[in-house]
Every structure is written in structure tokens, then in C-alpha cells.
Image (cartoon, rainbow over all chains, first blue to last red; front, top):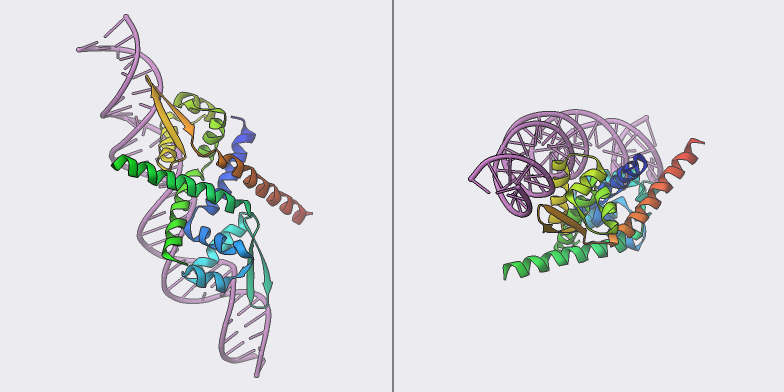
Length: 106
Length: 106
DNA sequence: TGGATATATGAGTAATTGCTAATATAGATC
DNA sequence: GATCTATATTAGCAATTACTCATATATCCA
């Protein structure tokens, strides 16, 4: 494996790490229909504002979200809609997992 | 957000966590062209056999890989080719990141 | 059956991640 | 300028992740 490939995998892992948390996935799905402000996201997800702020900052840093300010509010928007398609694939994997486990138990 | 949605995000996060590591991504790309045995994977990635074994086990547990034994060797195969397409998308995000950072520095 | 080989696992340790509570910062309004 | 509101950040702590080393387990062969 070349050093270039290794480096590319490291960068890709950064992005995937930034996706790999339930709260961040919930935020992304919420943003599927367009940009939202932090307060709406807090309400939708149902956890503390400070926790949400951390997660938003992390995803912005990873290039997954972008933001814009409007008065006191900050609106976040999804920059990688392809993630939503991928989640469909992930869901299939999960369902296969459950099917296989069910079959194994029978 | 409903409890069902929350649960689904948790499960999706499990799969993404299982992907989100440079060595695991390298393994997945190596498996793009078909199943490989552990010793080939060890050689390709260039880290310890025990480390590789841990990563393989984790991905198998998450439903990403499947395996079959042949004598002393164990062959692993990718169960979610859609991940490869998604990596293309992740790469675009990474490149956008680099472009934006370059623009910001100029 | 013993030795060799391939692979998986346990234990210990360090690094990373994620949460909460408190608080700082920024913008708006009076 | 003070107050309020929205959001971001710091610090502390707990949980999780990842690695190495040593070793266990399984398979093959003489």
C-alpha cells in the first residue's frame, strides 16, 4: 500500500468518524429537508444545546456541514447529500444482520 | 425525533464506526477486487497480524465483511460494495475541504 | 503425535471520544 | 451600557477505541 493511499484512507476515516455517532446522524437526517437553526436542531434531537453545538462544530470541521449566521441564530446546512444515499445502504446491512441473526436463532 | 428513529441512528452509527478507521478502509479497498486471505491483507496493509485480525473481526461483526475458511487460511470478502461508491463521495468532500483551505490561505 | 503455520483472543495501556456543567462570546433590544 | 438570547468553548470526567505483546486455537503434514 503506497503512502499516498495510506494518507487518503486517513482522511476518509476522519470524515467517517465525523459521521459515526447517533446524534450526528440524526442531525444529518433532520437537515435533509434544508438548513435549520441550532435551536431547531436541539429541539428535534432532544439533548443539551452544548452537546449539539459540539457535534455541529465537529461536522462542520469535517466538511459535512456549512453554516451561516442570521442575527443571533446560526443555520446549518448539509454539504454531502450523498451521505443520505449511503445510509440506505447501511440500513440494508443492518437489516441483513438482523435477518441472519434471526435465522441463526431458529 | 421518535424512539424508532433514535434506535435506527444508533444502529447506523455502529456500522459507520466500524468503517471509520484508516486500516479498515484500506482493507475494504483491498477487498474491492474480491476476497483475500488474512496473510495477503497483512502484507498489503503493512501492520501486525494481530492488529489486522482485530479489525477484520470488528468489521465482520458489523456485517461489513464475511469470511470462509480454507485449510489454515481464512478468506474475507466485502459484503457492502456500496461503501466503495460512498468513498468516492467522501473523497469529493475531502478535496473540497482542501480547496477551501487553499483558497483561504491565498 | 509433534511441529509448523495461520489466525484469533486476552490483558494491559494509551489515546481518543463524548457528555455535562459552567461560562464566555456575539448579536439584538431598550 | 445593561439585559436578554443564541451559540460556542473550557474543563473535568467517564467511556470507548486501538495498539502491542503474548499466547491460545485450529489446521495441516510428516
